[in-house]
Image 1: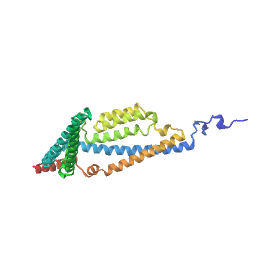
Image 2: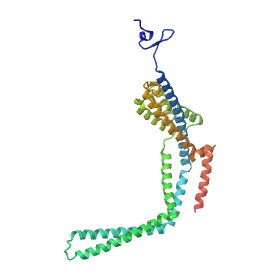
Image 3: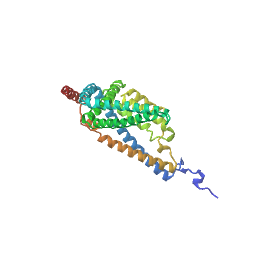
Length: 318
């Protein structure tokens, strides 16, 4: 029996020039194309998301460096003013708390004495009555403490004081972090280059795009990449990109997967990832800080205006 051309080629198709071409399942090809399209969308949208987050972080850092000291001083002053207003309520609460603790200690002491006595002891009834009275006094004091706490919690000045106190702590922490953060100063051209190279490098090692066995390595490199981007570290970005282009290479799942079920699973996963990134982008667009940034043409002028306004507000506090 004569063998067919495909049998002679051991499952390979011959071109009209006699070259051997590997057979590819049409269904697999369609899924790989779909996966490739998803990968490219994720790369583009995630790069945009990282850029926008980077802008927000840069703005917040510059804001803290420009006016953080003044904000701390003003919040501290507001906290002091409100502390004076709630001093009486706080004193009442602390007094009731101290009395309650004393009542508890007295009750516990009498209970210990009672436990050591036999019911037939001469002192038992006397200690029992004292313990019972102490228990009632403790409960009365507990109610007074709860009333004092409720009065404090419902006081508008106390609520404002707690909010200012929390804001002061967060502002102080943010200002300290901004002062300690390692950052490089770049001119406009270098900033454009930083953004361009970061996007290029991020596309080459995106953890959701690479094959499964390389995901951990991709996460590691992406973390270093994001850290360098946050620090305006152009040289580190260049080194990471050079490594990705000439050393460590990440295969995209769409270039390697051949199994239909694995392709379907990866497509479903990346569809979810794409939806999450889209939601994140929408949230960023709705973010008040980002909207403010979009309206500002000159950051330095804006920070200067904010500082002047804060100085006037501080002076008005007295």
